[in-house]
Length: 347
Length: 114
Image (cartoon, rainbow over all chains, first blue to last red; front, side, top):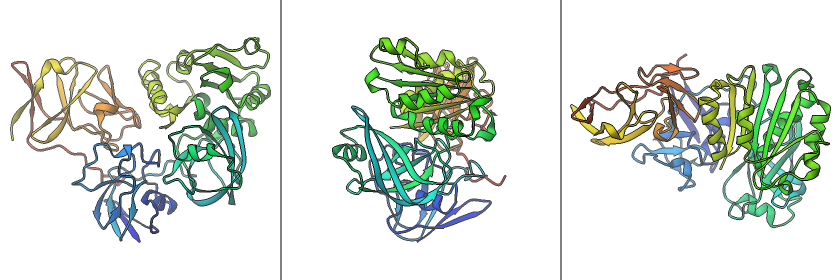
């Protein structure tokens, strides 16, 4: 089916397959449609159907709050075409970076499956072709028996790889999360679409990095740290990471974080904040190079932010309320220019 | 159309945003200290409703979605914002905030020629 988006300056056209989400079809064709979560919660990929018939998909998608039925407003990430369609998109259509990678559909196989803590799993998905992605990007994943894509940031970084490493937190009410925790899913197949997302790291930008993660939000920041480590970025540039989890038992990736700190002891600072318990005596001894704190991660991170931002890029990754709680003081109190903040929030 | 009462001025506190609907038109009200402003309810970037996403301080509004910012008095864009806020005329009469509604102000999302 042919989809058309008319703008004054040009008309965009792309093909969408039956059942394919319009957002994914457009992005796959290289059209930089607006989106953020790509999974129905944020509302950024709003469009109006001016001609043609669509299947709206997830009718209770949170991103549709205040959408106007009379204007035929839809979420492109949830909607598929049932005929040729014309859409109007109420925002600019503009590429984020020239080197953005066109996302595409893949079928992957789970090749590794490991519990990191009581309620966090790490798993690898192998896809049939080598692809590239920016550090900090995500894929949307859909399990065979579960309807609906969910977004997960890659933990690894490798230019040209068929391995995508993810972490996932247990959510008994979640779709994919419940499915993957139910039993060892090694060798099971997943549908994937990506890479997606703009909270990315690019060494040519030459910033110091200030990173705050809550829980599994650490995934994309691990990818950024890994890329920086591979290209020796932290030889000349500083990086501060604040990673919040509930208790010492919930802390994962300790070895990987220690390795980064050990490789760049003078430029990298890694702070672990436990919201619900004090650090252990061994952690407080400071022998492993990491700094352990008690309290909410944002309470420790915010005072460490430099007013005005300097030449620093700030990365925020975690649950929506955590990220929202950080953005306000960063802008209002720390006076960080908004172009020095990149965030990845999930619901 | 004409001047329409929106709400008592005391309902619109400084550094906050209040949305109301007059004759079916959604309007966003703000107190800029020495007066009031009325805007269309959404961000001119991606139509985010600013009552929820707008952060106000020192007469600067920031949409927390993609961090567009404006001078709340003039509507002029600051920082990365590419479009101004549209503004309805307002006045205060007997403690009521009045908005001049000639026609609904709407953002043109199609001016992407640059």
